[in-house]
Length: 111
Image (cartoon, rainbow, N blue to C red; front, side, top):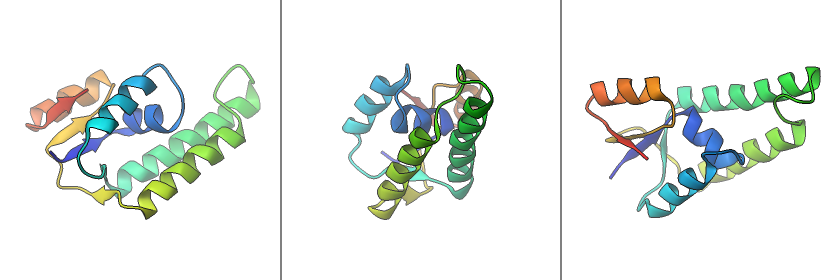
């Protein structure tokens, strides 16, 4: 099954947060590489950089640069070893609005 994540799934997969166990568990069940798009990758990179910006202004928000660097390095390693672009039938998200949109487009929404 071809699956396409959104930014909430990637954030949960590449940085520890409440949904991380569910993201990791689902990823372990996948029989092929995770599918991504250029827009998704841009959005994810901007999201983690924004968290660093927040943290620089208020240490109670966001996360430090080292966490961002680690997440981006892990993503790049995965891209270099086989993440595939598009062709998805499944959409992976924890965002309620994204779930509705994906279902409207006839994608199977997981987890």
